[in-house]
Image 1 (cartoon, rainbow, N blue to C red):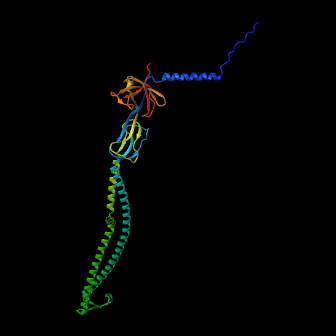
Image 2 (spheres, rainbow, N blue to C red):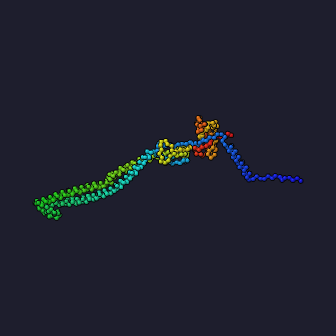
Image 3 (cartoon, helix red, strand yellow):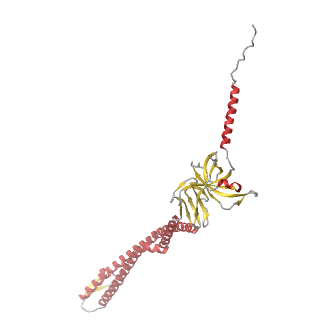
Length: 373
């Protein structure tokens, strides 16, 4: 019997070999997918654009407050910022300063008025009291002299007279009845005349005191207002009222300088800060309409036939997001490019198909002809 060699037995593949084959297969698949997905024609770098509304300051002013933030969505009529004119701001500051000064002056004058009114009232009260005391004394003298006059008149009517010396009092004198004139009778007549005159003088003094008292009382009654006028309180108060009214008018006029949005969109950029002074027609805020977007691209003139108006194009956004677009507009004249050896044709690409990703305007994208089925 002939000996035969043992049959060859196949061994299973090692794990290392399997892993190598898998890596090769995946790499080949990725390369094939990339090859199939790569641009089929020339690519151009474009810039994503959005419809931008620039809000301007119609006339010079100063930014009082900014009430919006970048990225905030606004609608027509929404408040963006509040402005005031430089002239208004200067007037406002001047009027506020005047108002503070006048209020301080008015407070000082009111305090001075209270002090002067107090001591002047005390002086008047003292003088009125003295007048009243003098009037009482004169009134007593008047009554005494009238009594003497009446007594002497009665004595003389009955043909009587009194024995008086220079220091004697009428009530202490001796009454003598005599029907014939004597020196004592003449003296009695003279005493009657003196008493009559003294009574009239006392009555006049009483009347003068009463008039003086009436004048002092009237002066006391009008003293507060007279003092206020002499110190200029009412004049200062009138000035303060006028300044407050002017200040209110300026503040109300200041409110009318609010800037509001006229479109729907997002706040793109804010070019000013609070407190900044603005010039006429100065740009203050940029509002971006994120819905109405296009791509601005410069197409090399040697490839322009592949990008005719209405041609579908592929657009690669940042993050490898791929979308479609359509050539909406081409310039009729080519322009020089940074490369002196060629010219470019500006073109506008509008959205087509799937919604474009939310990429900030100004981002760069890659544009190339779409693959033909």
